[in-house]
Length: 263
Image (cartoon, rainbow, N blue to C red; front, side, top):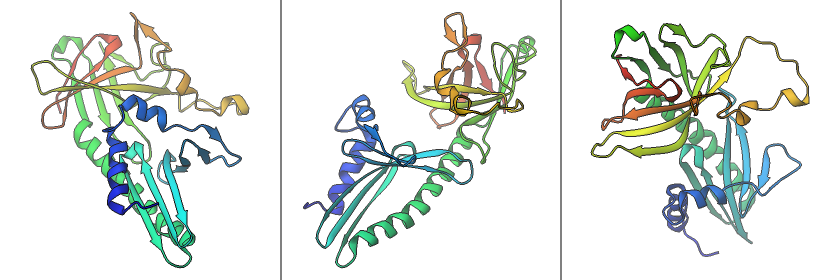
């Protein structure tokens, strides 16, 4: 009731950085508790959660909000955890409910696309490139690249011991492979390098879908670790990041090989 913009900014940053709660508790807290009759709206405790589709790649972005109001005053706290950003709107005077909505629309329409563009630019600088085995006789390499029309980091080329891994097989069940961060990382002992965990999503983009209720859902959510090789999931990747913030090596863990950046 008596919050200031400074107060709301401080609490917003503490939530995004998990400085008051552990990351695990924060993630548990920021989840829907119930869905509504609207497909793009859910409720949490205390969240009002909106789901939007980005225009360029149809990616879903979850926006966690909390409203507060008294006669003549309306406030909206907005957090976008997947983009590590947010904003707060405080209004007073006449017609404050409409003013909050209009201002929030303007801010979200500006901030979210800008944050996504900045994230793609940062990810491209850090990860895009070709990574190869130091043993030239092995003939193994991976090329990572970003595509503005798609989410994640794409594997545009993947050769393992002379085999094209982008040919659909039991190990790689799809002609398209994209990497998504897991949020897991560790600092290497005695080094400033950081290993960052990724999961690969395999899709066969050339196959025809059969349609229907049970073939239109995002099946990849249930396919983590679906294919193993020696107790390691074929979709598990680790990227080593140097002190300059750029990737130094990529390891498809199931293949037990480290590929070092060559380009």
